[in-house]
Length: 198
Image 1 (cartoon, rainbow, N blue to C red):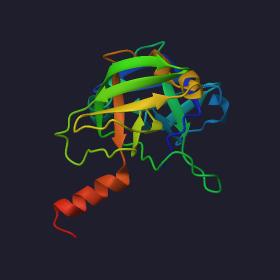
Image 2 (image 1 turned 90 degrees about the vertical axis):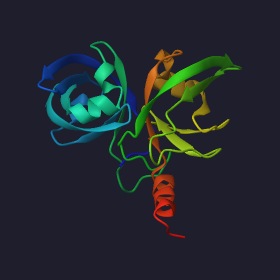
Image 3 (image 1 turned 120 degrees about the vertical axis):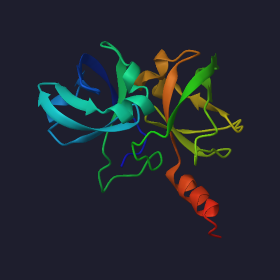
């Protein structure tokens, strides 16, 4: 479980294709603190550490993950948003994020306005259970954000300078593919109504 508050970005140092899987070697400032079996959110995708060496660690993304997220498009030299699993006893910032990407979306607009940035995204509204409400939450590449100007298939977010600095939002442009995880509570409620519970 995660909160959508990105700790830092990691640099992809190597990618190995193994059957339909991809093994990523990622360098991160807290790499020496990592150990096998740790869970990390990578652009919003929960992956398990399989090995470490110095400030680098390895994770494996399977075919399903590569097809449902933007991890299949990453290249050596790219940066990814990282968050370690939530720890008990701390403040709960952001919102409940599972690290299970529902679908991808695309950036359709970006603009700097008075020191912050506006981004518009579009997504496929036909994906079952995925919907938004005005001023609700969404997780974009592992970043917990509040949405507005919501339509059936589009929404807008505002990015403050701190988020721009510490995440991969600074690399976004029109056409950028992003990972989307919709609010888990909203998905459960929608599913209950679909099944006839009232």
